[in-house]
Image (cartoon, rainbow over all chains, first blue to last red):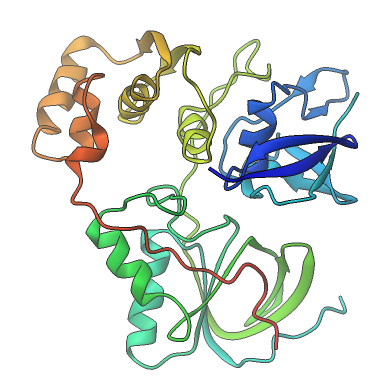
Length: 81
Length: 226
């Protein structure tokens, strides 16, 4: 399968093309997609765009549901430290 | 709201490109209506016919996906309706760009989502809905070697358990709320249905049970804004 490079907090990571961003981040071992008000890590739950748990910042746009977004070359995603 | 207005005159907007939405769009296009189908997913098909390029789909899905595509029907994926400010007016988020859409009618075919009953720990990363796991699997999540416990009730946990097993995950336990008799009845009732019969055996080969054909989903990646 063809890989693409995405930038995770500025760090280039190779992931297979045709993955959703959620699946790609999970595949990279990332389990903190965002942080809730109590400081707890949150990650995908529904996988189909209804729960909004997997929302991340992509190319400067906040609140993007990563489960609905296919990865593409050069995509920039910002995650909590 | 000052959003650009979709230039094309529309008779019908269908929200949701699953089996119901596709069927509605196909029927309307069949009597000469100008139809736009919206779906928030990257490709049409909904949850049931979710696919990636190269996946095989049931013939029924392929047939409908082949009919509901440009130029017969406009299809926009990665698109969500965010407002309906007036009759026949929709504000649509086409992958980050807002546009106003004017239409004679709207069909909502937004489908269903899982009902997840909260329990302590349910927000921890790694706890996902069984439908969510199925969606993530189809979105390319590798699970080989993962240890998984499935808890809940209904028909979906079983085929997802079979799919996880098929992909190399270790399904440690399936915790089914219904009693054994109800599960047995379900298994028997599923025996004549190739899709549901996947549930009967974790060693089944789900793909071989389908009449197969190349995937046919087609979709404009962004707004068909004129």
